[in-house]
Length: 319
Image (cartoon, rainbow, N blue to C red; front, side):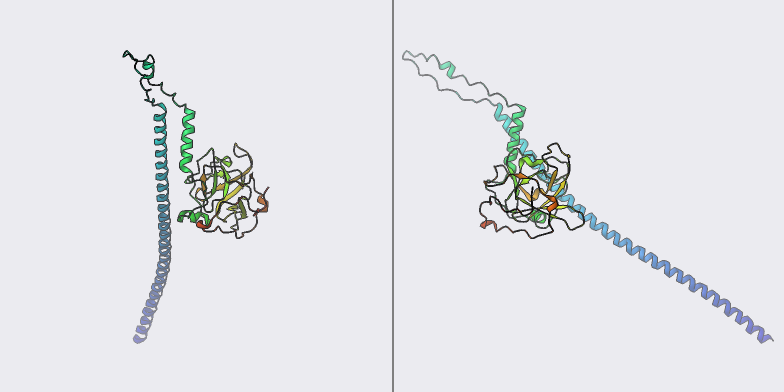
């Protein structure tokens, strides 16, 4: 009897220990599950931190590029201000030129007109504000213009990223964004083909140079295949990417057309002269006829280029 009682007691203790062991195992499983969740959350946090670090580095690169562009713009502005100040000084400074003295008479007396000849001429009339503005505008155009007979150039890495790889400048950063010339035209920076007249440029406030018309047979169009329904504009001479075109009714004061060519400054080159002989008139584009992507003709090397062609067959139907 005593032995049976001890056996029962031992069995009860074993059952109790097994229950405790089961509870401990359950608690350990819960801890492992919690640790797995914490590890997953920590891994996700690490990945997010890496993404944020990459974004921060990209923004820092953009900030440095903008600082460089702002410094270049400030340098050009200071040079322009200096030119304007020099022009003002030259306009108001009297000319210190004197006529030669009259020939003395035989009795030692000077000729009667000597006193008048020795008097300096009256100072020139100071330039009006309008004349100063016009002079400053022409000086700016001279500074921004490429040499006469421009036929394209060897692209820098930044220019090639825009023209050959369809890059986009930062809004407001282009050198032609607020530039409003009163003469000349804009050509493709890669091949030199005339694209826009100075009259076509207008202030749209979009952050990029805007034009309402282009020269005939200067631009090819294609609808983007990225789902945005945007229409890309490319140079009809070399196929270089220029930007995009949009239909916007009555959105600017000029209202020469309802089209806004949104172009990159680095894809264009300003020339202060008249466009080459044979350049067609200005026109709008038929956006409904924009075709799927096609291969545009490539420009020959710079040393093999001749004068710009007067006109090529239309790449896309135009109105």
